[in-house]
Figure 1: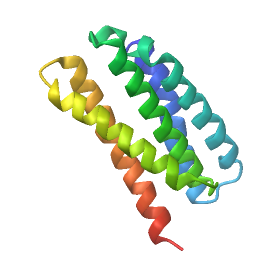
Figure 2: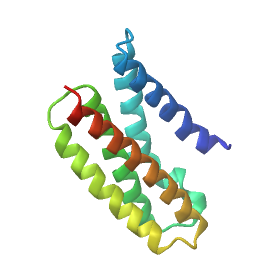
Figure 3: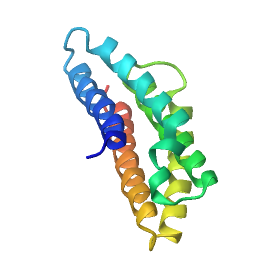
Figure 4: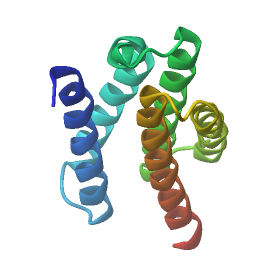
Length: 138
């Protein structure tokens, strides 16, 4: 792993671990969840063009990808913290992730788009799992 991948992986791992800890009501996990989610959303929104620059992808696709991943992280954060409007963020994140998924599928021969395809499928799966958890658990 290079430094760019670590910059993406470490906050994502902390976010997912703190989300699991939050579900089990571990003390101070909410604070770690909010901080790591905010940092991760900022990383994806502001630094997506820098993170994925080595993949030879047009800037427009990188901007859409960064925005989609950022909105998904915010939707997960709002949903797990039981804040208002998490439904709206979830729908917007899913739509944007489907746009990234369709762009990646259309250009799947490029290895850079394969990386975005894997990430978008991962984020859609996590978003669907959290959405299902919040909808069907009372």
